[in-house]
Amino acid sequence: MRITDAYIQNTYLSNLNQSKKTLSKLQTQIASQTKVQKISDSPLLTARINKLSEQISSNNTYSKSIDSGLSYLNSTTKSMEGMSTETQNILTNLAEAKNSVNKADLGTFAQKVKTSLQSIIQYSNTDVEGKYLFSGTNSASAPYSEDQKWFGNTKDIGGTQNIKISPTVEQKINISGEELFQSLLKQSGSVDKNAVVGTTTSNITELSSADGTKYSAAINYTKTADNTYSMSYSVTDSKGVQVTAGSNSLKFDAISGKLTTINGKVPSKIFVDNQQSKISFSIDVSSMTEGSATSVSGSLSQPTNMLNMIQSISDGLAAGNLPSNEQLTMLTDFNDRILSKLAEAGGIQNRLIATSDMMQSQTLELQSLLSKEQDVDVAKASIELQTAQYSTEILYKTSSMILPKSLVDYL
Image 1 (cartoon, rainbow, N blue to C red):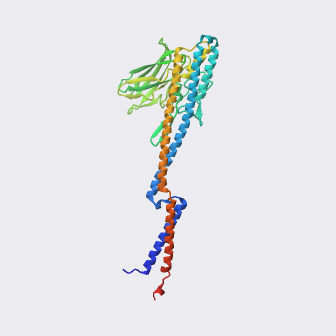
Image 2: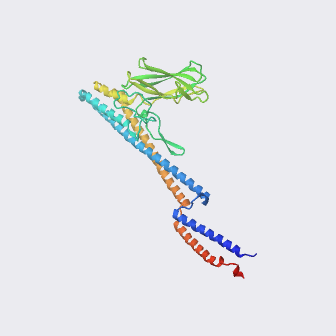
């Protein structure tokens, strides 16, 4: 096979061009500290780098969300600790007030209880970056006013605030005012869709007023049409005398059996407030369904609204009356409830901290993998650059022997 001078020259120029490309690539990598400058350099490597970068970015987003949640919970626990301290102060003052020596000073103890109540209200109105901690999902406004005489259900301060701590996991970060202070009568179970119109299903729950008086709350479900029921409530005293009542229309989905509307509107809690009898609670029927059988039950979160109860104790002391045993029991239970919610908040904090630590470790590992894929080994690249420069110089020397030849050299 005859190898022409033109072939040798073309091959030489091709090798020289490739050597210059290698030299330029190494110089660019060392200058930019990255292996890939554009997708065409290495589509597969680019895809791996992008995937690792997205995972790191996602982890950073969740880490920021967790840090925000921890800040929220830290403020929540500090506020609840303050509430617990004030509740314990009330219990201490009430124990002293029961001493016969202090009978003439009940007015002073009334003011002390009132002061502690005002402090609890201040803690309940704590906000972080404009979000009120104990207002549930309605966090744009304070749950209570410090000059309130009656802490009725003026708005819903229940519901959960969640943050995402991974692509598939959400974590609750709030303790709502409803959980701490209010009395919630939660209805669960189902009414029978096969029952005839006029059929009534009932359940009765015992509750208390702010002054410790016992009452019965009867919840009745009467079928009025297909998938439609009248839900009525009636609160009576120990003598059977009705003190407050009301009714609402419930509509269920014919296929799924889920509750769709209350009085033609999106389902929400039903608030029951009767200041005269000092009764304040809310009814939650959101879990109710229409099924093939009747199974209705009710559970009460706590006997009465705790703030109203503390207010009632203060008013009683001012009038010369010691709190009832029922009130003292409810106050003790309220303090236990705060401590329980503190433990719940602590558990959430521990989970967030553990998740944050795990995410930081994962991010460090991802950054290490990204560095291996993307970053240039400067020492290695420098040696390769020197080699490439040497090869290029050799090619230049070779060119002095190949390229100058012309037809005259062969004559």
